[in-house]
Image (cartoon, rainbow, N blue to C red):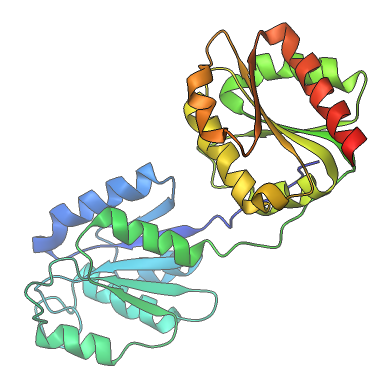
Length: 288
């Protein structure tokens, strides 16, 4: 049974930026929102508010432009961007990270104040100069999404039944028919989720007699997903046989040709799929 396997949620303080970086900051904010990362918006925030807001986040992002936010008496030093940079720098610790993004670095040249910033980087400060906000956010998520210990409960099962939540309605019918006669553990997968299912799937398969990947509409997802499971669990040397079962109403037998010689497949009518799974289970139980 899948209980609670997840990546850590985190909150970003998106620092204000100097004027010439305002458009890039908006692009970055858009990407963060699309990535479903919680944001505290630091636009226009100074001193007292910065000291209140920034510590409530898990990390901060500071965009470095051509205006100096680091050197006292410089134009950007007392701007919101400069103030927030100093507040965040003082907070750096194992529980707070500071991301410095320099997206406009050109031809390998770095402004003197940026060199000063880089020389003065402390632990838990991360500097990036890749220009793409999408790549930057991917790197940020990789660093911040330190996986917590998986909380799982593996139950011995005859059948480990996996499917995409898009096919939840038709999958429920198969699951209900199977569980009347066999011990079945099911796993609906949501591909829009940040959950890391890999470890759980490997361990639950080791506690199951067979694994089944079922699909109806979601063939584009199910075929590469099943192939990846096969690789991750030892390929042909795996102790748990896998079956890919597609509903013939929408599944195409040709899409399963990639499994020739490596994995059992079936494309059948919805009402016959539980029987196909039972036959596959019985066949492999006798061989074990």
